[in-house]
Structures are given as structure tokens and as C-alpha cells.
Length: 219
Image 1 (cartoon, rainbow, N blue to C red):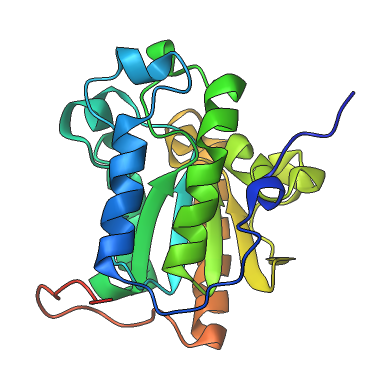
Image 2 (spheres, rainbow, N blue to C red):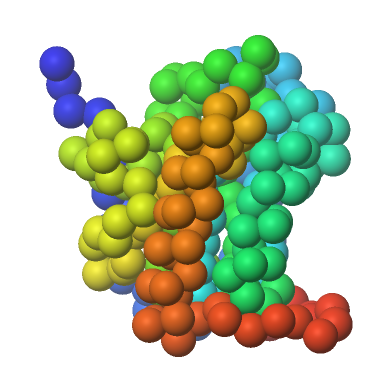
């Protein structure tokens, strides 16, 4: 069985020679919006690209947009998003400290993860991570982990532990939607979230309570 392609396989070959710019981010967004490389590009209501800071310390990477996200064009706004937002609040991450993206940028019918779509979207994910330059990537669910470190699957054997990827901290979690399926998954989500909180404290991120809205970090 051939090795599953990862973000590494499409990582930009040429090292970044200059600073990040909003124009570069806008150009990447336009390319994603115009993409029709897989069938999902013709089925979506809206493309779902990014939520949060453009200079995050922590980047959460989910699997694919759901129906709620497809309607509004924003990652993690449904039931799973509420659970993720609660975790982010508990971690004490300010709005300027985190961002959220998905492996797949369009809603797959029936919420069935599509390897074909993941393959088409993988260069976009690589460019998002390279642009955002977080200190940590938190993957949500097995397909998100597979985009970076398929060797760490199955997810339950790796969730809640710190790994390395391209010099960054990589921290897998089960998908927040799974926490609603059983008490065992809920406990696992909570335990691994607590482990993430301890790690972030050691890395100097999180651990604070925002007193009001914060503006998005500039680039």
C-alpha cells in the first residue's frame, strides 16, 4: 500500500525570502475560492478557509467543514465548534493567539471525509501553515493528524501527547464532535485538553483570560 501523501510532500520548496503580507494571504484565499480541482468545488455553498489570527501561536487543524460551516464560510461554527471554542476559552488563548483551518476547504456531502478532496487541498493547507507560522499545530481527528504524521495513527494512541513536525510542536486531539458520542470520548477530550493546557503553559502560550475583544494581529 503506497504511503499516504502528507503536507510535507507539497511543502514550498523555496524558503521564504521576505515577510508575510496581507496581499499574499489574500492571493492564497482567492486561489482557494477559485479552486475546482475536485468535485466538492462545484457542490459547496461557500469555501471555508480560516478563522482567527494571521499570526497565531496555536493552529487548530480540523478535517472538513460541516453543513453549518458551508452556510457561513467559517470553520467550526456548529456544535463541534462550540465545544472547540469552550476548550480554547479554557486554555486561556487570546484571539490573537490562535487560528483554525481545515484539511478540506469545502463541505463534503454526508460529512464523509474525501481523500480525493484532501489531496487537492493539501497544497493550500501547506501554504496556510507556512504563512501562519504557529509554534504548535493541534490536529482534530484522525484525518487531520494523517495530513501531518500518518505514522502516529491510530488517533487514540497518539491523542493527548506531544510530538514534533518540521520543528513545531504537534499535539493530536480526537475530533470535538466525537466527545458528544459517548462518555468515554468526552472524558478523553477533557483529559487531553487538560494535557494541552499544561503544555501551552510551558511554552508560554495561553493561561490568560481575555477581558474584552482583541483585534486581529496584523501582518
